[in-house]
Image: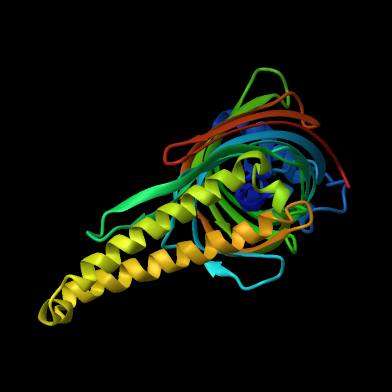
Length: 373
């Protein structure tokens, strides 16, 4: 089998993100006293942020109130899939959790995002997210069935790497606070990913706390910021979709694999029936034997029904469709991040951030231009 958009679409949900890149810093220290005093008497020239003049006069160095950033983001992340139900040609859905096992499912994505933002308040940045991405998804899975001894074996497998396009849009905000010359930022955003294999755009929520410090350089307005923090992803659990059969299976080999699978199901069913009929009534009444028999029959019946239905769909493969429903979640909700930003001046900033630990690795690079409103 060749799985493409069926599972690829849901794995993309963790892939796009964006963060505020500048923060309101409080001017502290004797060497900065002259700058702090100058802020107390200067007239703040912009409408945003609200209360900007009052805050500036209290010794806070405010960034320009509006900005536009372009970010490139790369991520490789594992995901867990469960409650998988699949049907064909708008027929009944079959729950495949008991017989389908995923060895490892992961998505690798490169994305470009554009983020316009404003400082609504001196401690609150709000922004929008617009992104385009080309994710590729790696899937390794198999169909497993039991025998009379309750030993499970794989009767069919598939491994694939799929590529597709996706568009993301979203909104976010970043509350910040100055802490003794450093800053704490709590970035959070909601986004919706539009993928043609899904019935509707899929929702994801990202939370990224960061604790950092900005170090001034010799040239005015030039500095380097360093930070550490965390990255947490929540994606909408349920996903439903409709897709062409030819987009999921390699039609050149699917019929052979289905025929072999049906043969193995029938062989195992015969072994289970022979074992059960060879037991005495007392042995059949044993709860352990009864449970093993029921489990084997249920799994074999489910595998046989699914493969037989798929066999029928393959007879009209060019016009057949697959309907699916599943629950998905990241393998790890959190990972660790470190980052840095070089501010060339108050208008132009360059940013680099990386995330690691757990089952997710990511890198973000960005360029930002700021101006006053």
